[in-house]
Length: 153
Picture: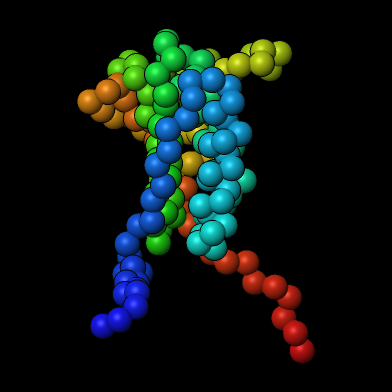
């Protein structure tokens, strides 16, 4: 056969992106842009605004709560059932109160303290797991059915 061979991905296979990000606040807008692009490129039906918001929270937490300047890693995986987004950082310590509420309401006057609450409230599931280099903190968003436009008569 001459020319390029094209393989179509089975409809149940995942598409994924992985990128190293700097250990600085500059990582947040880069991560948001990657998530936005990944979801738009494949016309994925997970809510892009929510995915961007939760990604920004995970990346900001990784930058703020891990010491050193080792890069953090963003992994975006799109599945037919939704998406999973992970942030890998070098700190093995589990993020506090990610999978269960702390019992305390966040102070409405404080700038910090709502990120994990948002992740728990807006994701379909979330968690963390150890990795060889530290930990991965993740969330999943379920696919949203496509919106139907007004019926034409």
